[in-house]
Image (cartoon, rainbow, N blue to C red):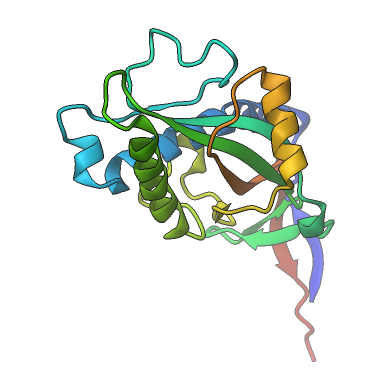
Length: 221
């Protein structure tokens, strides 16, 4: 029978855990971008990554001045245009995790966050039939993304390693035509063929807490 926990954490331990959780939240979107870059570089057909003009991967805002001269074309651009909580996956139940040393750690339920990417492609100057090339490249990107319902564990970068639960992926998220036009209007860019890609990750808002060791009461007859 569980009676009590011994060895509760001190204030200093909690402050240190909160600081680590804050740093993790600050870099997780950057690691998400890095993971997508690695995924596309590895999975796109060789004609796009090892040819005479390898495709660049960027994460810029596709506004009226895009693409900038600094971006080497052809390119796949993944613009993170919206981040919000996935309330359908919200949970308030913490998890109790037993450690190897017999202690118990309480992990508050993380927030589930949807990250929406607008994916566009751009041909290099002078390529014959640039629209056909862009559709060919966009189709190749679509095939790669549709192959994975979650980001491959062997490719995730930085803070996403050992991420639980794994980052979920939806490559063809439904978007109303009007909403898509509103995005382009806000960007002051020229509308073009796009993919709406959504990744769902978990974000620890509060650090896990060390609850100490479980003490069992043993009855003697």
